[in-house]
Image 1 (tube, rainbow, N blue to C red):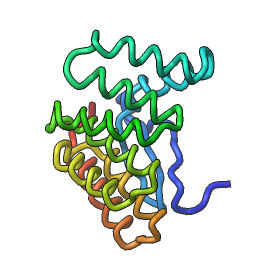
Image 2: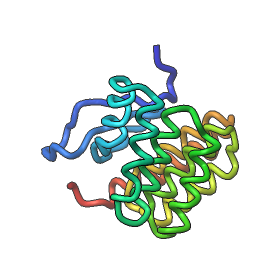
Image 3: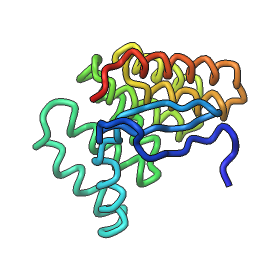
Image 4: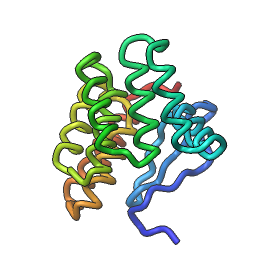
Length: 171
């Protein structure tokens, strides 16, 4: 059973097939559907195994332009439970593309896996600065604050996310 502050997905209520509603802490937040890459990575991990996935990501890295290859390897390392190695890759991705919200999200996820909540929150805040109309980073930040027992900050993040979603045109 889900707690009152745990996110849950609902079916889309808007005409756009790219939107879904997420309910967290009693607030309904419309958001875009998730990027399928992490789902594909998880599926590949189950099929070929963790070590093969990490090796494949390392071999593919030179073929992906800019920070994308570094991000793919970082995501594979995170899924493999290698948070310290993933953190180094995500830091490199941010160095290569400081204006990439996706790189900031990866960096925050690595910090979270390592239990470094303050740097994770800072990375989510930078992600929000880079993509202020995307409600997803607000949700991630709120969830982190909730785990930190900072419900006051979680509520603010959720409210800001709802405002960002309301200000965004439908996809």
